[in-house]
Amino acid sequence: MKTLFITGGSRGIGAAIADKFIKDDYHVIMPARGEMDLSSPVSIKKYFKKNSGIKVDCIVNNAGVNPLAFVDELTDEEIFETVNVNLIAPLMITRALVKGMKKRGCGRIVNIGSIWGVVSKEKRAVYSMTKNGIHGLTNTLAVELGGDNILVNTVCPGYTNTELTKKNVPLPEAKNISKDIPLGRFAEPEEIAEIVYFLGSSRNTYITGQKIVIDGGFTIK
Ligand code: NAP
Image (cartoon, rainbow, N blue to C red; front, side, top):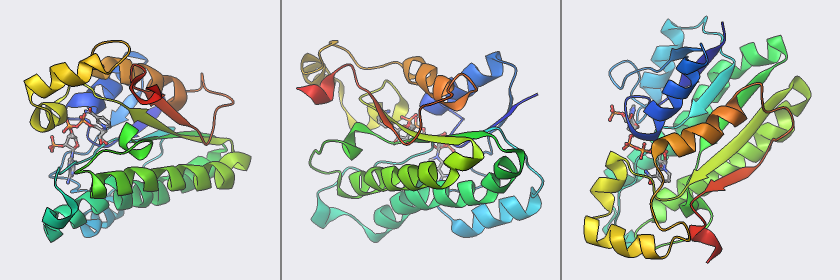
């Protein structure tokens, strides 16, 4: 049986991704925040010390936070939480799990980025910084791990119907934004999960080091 390790599997895009792999008979490991707090490097280290024998076929670094604020209004807490959850955690998790993949000569890693790592919008300084950083991680890993048959990609969702979006985009604004999306609507988490599943499973044999944008055409306008 194959194993997926995913962060942020409790809801939203992460829950849809976990469902997709479960339907294909994967064993899914998705630590809850109480077991591994991604905003705390110490907590991540403790988790892997306790669970040192985990062998996984696929890692999906999905969990993310997005505090909306103009750059001069960001608090220290928002800056450090966002950098830790969105950027440091994916690196630490990959570092902990990739040794097993290298030994077995096979693996897939999917990092969840964002369109805000491709184009820009106000109030997203720290979020965009981390989502751009994720591409650096993906690119380096794709080069470093290609010889071990480990394929690494970033999926960049556009506006997707999750709690994060409900919190950050009030309904009247959502209606206006939808007018700027060629497909005329936000994505459903399952539509993002479909592509993550493809890239994270053995169906993907030759795509690595790529940013795959899933945004209904929003960023091409
Ligand atoms: P969401 O509904 O807000 O869910 C976030 C997930 O991350 C939850 O499972 C949450 O766990 C987990 N999480 C957050 N902070 C954590 C921490 N400190 N420790 C452990 N877990 C933590 O988010 P989403 O909309 O599904 O977004 C998922 C990913 O897609 C993120 O990387 C986001 O940046 C990206 N994305 C989303 C959109 C969108 O429109 N929704 C667009 C582009 C990119 P709890 O249940 O414990 O809170």
